[in-house]
Length: 591
Image 1 (cartoon, helix red, strand yellow):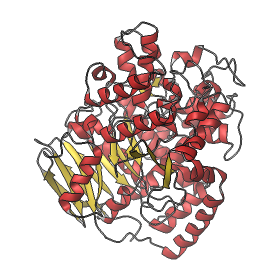
Image 2 (cartoon, rainbow, N blue to C red):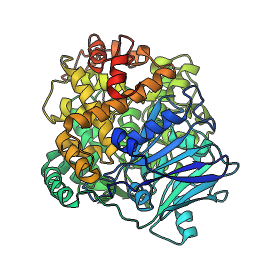
Image 3 (tube, rainbow, N blue to C red):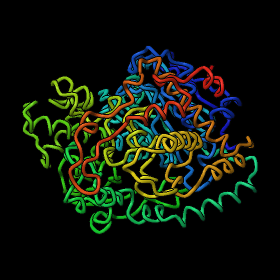
Image 4 (cartoon, rainbow, N blue to C red):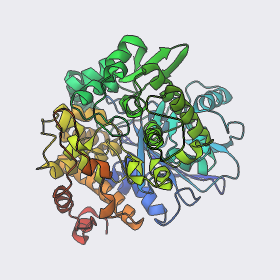
């Protein structure tokens, strides 16, 4: 064994046929797993000119060789496809238990193509796979779907990854939910799943997942476990969850508020991780093999759910001008049940709030409107009333009403919870992200705000392009490995290289690890170029370029791409338009 399950599933829904093939050795060597597998398979199989919601698109589930090996925080899987929201080649990452169970069922990846004539779900079962009728599941929420499949199979060990009504209704930012609360959240993978009439993938099994060198892997496991346990950020995540960032980002005056009109929310403490821990937190929860357990199980007013994480906490809270934690948690729960991206949903609502306040759209909702916001979440999921327009995302909505500049998005994907005007490197990372507005494809918040691995001045641009490239390449490799990105607060490239070498037997070092990440990044970039993307798309909303911040230390700052973008392209071996040169393609084996 080499950390891999050894087999892949190809499910042709149009033909109703499931084929099982060995996992190719070359794919393991060049792309590791996870995001690497997904992007390679997607770009090999799908014409870059197709509509993301056509039956010619594919959906690739892929775990990594470190998923399910017992390595601390080795639980992740990726879903790759062409995004209906951004139209880029994308991957969405999720944790929980499903990725481990997919491998225990005997599979490294599942490639879904075509479209079923009627709703189906795919069962992975100890080395076998079959399509099953899901007509009785259509219209159900993610929680109802999960419970129904577990009951139908009479097996509580089954893990389910599914869509809710939002995916069925083809909301462009619908997500995929596993274990009721864990999301492959961004880019609209849930809509692609819905377009194929695929309601769920269920997995069960007890097949072995073993490393090539178990003895050495255990030594490296102990080393990384200790580093994670001793890491200050990991300790804060364990105590307060990801929402520990609310106060930190707010105190730095880079917490986007009221659709990025400002970057400081006076009432941020009311929705902070500390307040969550003191009021509605029931218990912490972790993914498979997690020693951090940043998940928050919250209970309030007879309702229970997991979250909110920092991003939806910010987006339903400060970005919508709301300071009621229970309302934020309720909105997050609705997103989980219906299968909605809990970043794009509230930030699209925030866009509407600003447009309504300025009279560009006739609608009663305003910033701070608790009832109005909750109603809009359900309307989006069901595509009812104005929710049908909002379900297209903030960029398409704002453009329809003549004000695209009020969509706080990049490549049509809504930006996450940090104001780039006060964090220059992060601005470059999200502007150049190959999947659109993003933070986890290159988490520059780590050095520029949190000081890991070293503290950088967030207001300067000098040196940031190299940092951004390194973080993007490393993240791509981590996503391919099956490890949680949060391990990067404590671990370095040598740690990941050692884990992969011991697990797979494929020798790698930090340079080789980063080269693999660079290969994945460039492959996504090249495919996006074929879909019409170019330099013009590597940017941020005009507000962030032209309207200076007015409070705190970053007063007067705007995002300044001048010089950074050219240097970034040069470091990547791309031409002035952002196209990888022949030499770079040859170097990475992408010719």
